[in-house]
Length: 135
Image 1: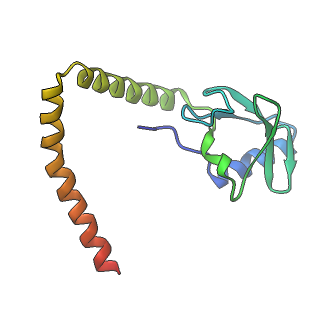
Image 2 (image 1 turned 90 degrees about the vertical axis):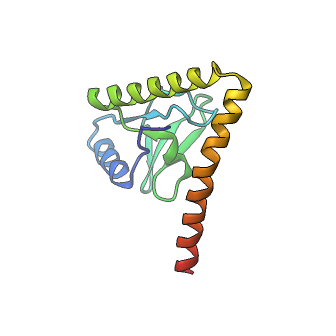
């Protein structure tokens, strides 16, 4: 579960404007970012390359984020207190669910998977029907 939104084009444009106005904007690396970044670390915008923002990876290499950039998904804006609390609550719930499943015996897990399989097959059939009706 990933409750933190990725950078949007509108946010990138706002960051670009802030950089042009000497406001020293920065972005935060996503919890599930590339191994070339540190999750949760702030990365200041150091330059502009056309419409793209430029920042430096941990090893000093340049990253360009902006239109048609795959790097956008690895960053987000700093979270408000409310967003941070919601994200932490979601992470805590996920950890509790994982701990619950890890505490189950293998037979209990097999029964759980078997029970879920019917719902997954039903959902898959519905999606297939919808796709086929569009085609």
